[in-house]
Image (cartoon, rainbow, N blue to C red):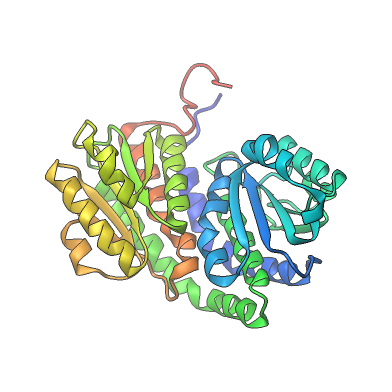
Length: 354
């Protein structure tokens, strides 16, 4: 296998303004036109890897914009544990959303086919390719158009999956106003996204100089899904293990682990989360852990206990935070790959893992 350059991460990041500006409006239109039952009360959002992380990251939008019972779940867990417990009587109130960037996941196709065959729920495919095999198995479709850029950590595909789920949440919110508000945000987002990318590159270059035996990546609510995605990019992009945990839970378990100098990445959204992040960062720095904090607005208390800080250029935080919050961590993976002299996906090894 030819070693894969981490420069591919930069290439994907550079296209995010175009992706958000073009694909999110298309997905909003698709969500608005999708034929869905009127009384959906439960949504299963299922996928693997980055697709599952996108499902987790969209949870805050469904919680704030809708009254549905939203259940993000790994695809295999849904297929082997949850699906056998479902019954046809709930079909008209249940939606199964299968997420796959390629649109060709065999497990996702099996879930869509069996759900329909047994009459368990309405089905919708969330993919990055129009006309893919999954689309043929689902009753409704949300499909972004993702230009192929070669194999790399799936930044564009994660972003597109998240956009699709936010569009679905806006549709399930039940008002045209929600869709219009999200559409209006797109027009205002370009400058803030550019600021986030620039600041994240600068901070990533700084944090890459720290010693990274592994990383603690913490978040809560929708940002816990982002934390899992960041940990995945560290593993794929530079071979650094990322341990993901909820903010408060870290204090009870991982705070007592060695090596004490392993850095921490804190994703902190609203004021309550930032207050908890200050407590966590204070404990971390007592043991010598450097702290990189990522938050949606300037917080002097959090900045004072952080070794580096990124303020996301996001006008309207809340459910939209996950569209930006992963950017510093993904760019850190790129900077660390350069520092450590590593190729992505262990592609510099003389053999293939799979």
